[in-house]
Length: 564
Ligand code: HSE
Image 1 (cartoon, rainbow, N blue to C red):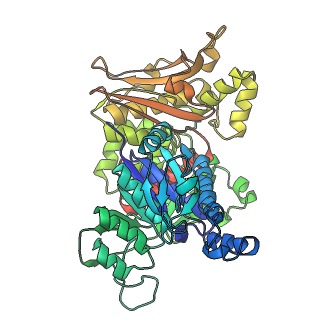
Image 2 (cartoon, protein in one colour; image 1 turned 180 degrees about the horizontal axis):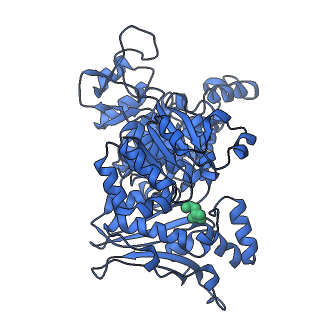
């Protein structure tokens, strides 16, 4: 079964500053983890196009700034969109999402007519589909295409929206155009008024032109109308949107998600990342208390003293809406998680040992409570491993995966000639390893993740002690030439009962698992109907794991579901 694709466009209004690329990458990741491949079309940041135009005016021929006679103006003006595409891909790379940039030329995106406002005529969908197969996420600049005589041409005002709609139409995929408002309103929602603005769940093309002219240029609307294409207008980080098409509806009152009070436990590699990302959204989240073992250490790092505590009672007394567990040990995390759920507090946990130890009983406890327990980051780092298990449960025959970033990183470094100790030291310095790295090298960390995969993907609770495992210290002798050594976690229901192990295996370089470099994580899901899905991401590290926690947080805030 082909993986469904979603086309996203990031408009100027949501790419105003460098930090907006982090938000855009987050938005992509949230869609990606629900099992979709993504084509992300970029606009230029803020007023970049005007800056480039001014440069053309100074350097180019007479009339260069309106394109009159300056055939090379599109070469310059497309740089804004191309810069955005590269920055967005870099932001995705930071969170370990598998992004790839492909330019209009590489995608055979052709156009004809006025070089400043050309009309799209073709796309090499075969190339784009191959790129999506190889990379899952393709970032491409909007607004530019290849015109007559192989010259770059531009697509006029609203050109990036037009690009996204055209690409989506050619792929037969849905499109979501991201703006700084979460859809079409009956009046400008930014204008002050006594009555709240109301958002349309659905609008016709004509109503969109009338009510939201500046939001989407006629060019893009005309194209969608001419093909009968439906699309959505939304805002990054917000679940609501407006559907545009041969539809109509009445506007409804909508509320922005309420601001949520967060209590946290842990301020280490991931905790520190979560702190920073949450702080970027004071309108959505507020950290009200943080439990750590040694407050002095964090006061020295600049964390506010009055928020730090060593007592679980203080976290409970803060009456949070959400408890984020980014600590490592099972105690006190597991009892506190149970207490929070019992009080109706939603929990986001990156603590794989605690959630694995809690097992089915903890999941049942969460189900009986008035709260949700999300723990996407507990296995696979930024690779959407557990989301896939939940989504495909009942259909999975076998999972093979690299579930420990530290050991994958170490094996690669050791293959390159580093000693075991040096490789481990770098993995620790980079923040991949657990506080006690024997958990990584001996397989205790991976065993907890295998238990979670078995629990969510197969509904079976394995005893981690019964999972046969190879430690990195079990490596003996020479590696077979022409092979790549990986420690592969396997959970299989092939024979009717669940079998799991964690084995050092010499793989062919063509094997998808063998192609995971450094702290990358790869997983292969084989289904009972013979179908196969592969997924990838960074298995460890601050930003990939933080992003996974943030995605759960947004799901709680928006009332959406991580498994899609
Ligand atoms: N120590 C873990 C690893 C962190 O290396 O995979 C991510 O769970």
